[in-house]
Length: 255
Ligand SMILES: [Zn+2]
Image 1 (cartoon, rainbow, N blue to C red):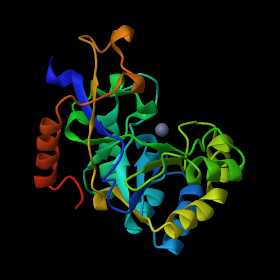
Image 2: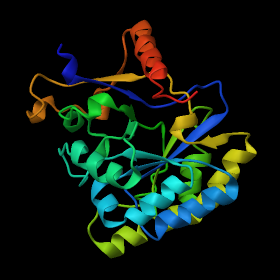
Image 3: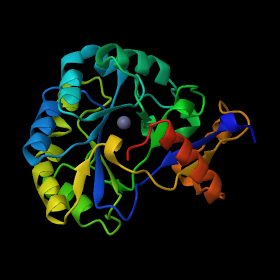
């Protein structure tokens, strides 16, 4: 199989370190992103923001505030469309504001079949999640708290997915959608910290055991577009370990 049709991605970190990675997608999105930044700062927590290129172009100041807060900025595509592979365009927009290349990338809609067409995606560390807050479809903050804090899979090394923005061009929806999550977030952060978890950005997080996504021969063929369900644990743990060590040597992964 051609290596170009294969992607490795991480769904969690070291299960033996009491660290959790909070991730926020689809921003920057004022004033919601600033509200998240305030909650994290008050709690002494750090996180990773997978931002969209189109919003980086529109709200560079908010993106600068994410960076100024000591958080990690990752690439989540430019327009966040189905089957779009516009990670190069997103990278140009993001790095134009931040001045540095991204290290981490999250596939829009976790659609690895589109991602695989991007040369840039092959040079970034791909990040999935093992805990979905479902915040994009829940409107009651209590439900979002439960989806995270009572999730049976929540444990050391978890990567939790939230949305501080939306890919939607409708301004009213984009601003209103994250409201319930923001109401829930102080309780979620306090709940995780009370269990002894340190909340860190991916630059301070040891990723563990990548999964392998394999597409078909022709990524433009809908039959060949992989989904998350196609993902399978890598058959070769030692090879994965080699890849991990290479990333580590290159300083791509946190300590
Ligand atoms: Zn997204």
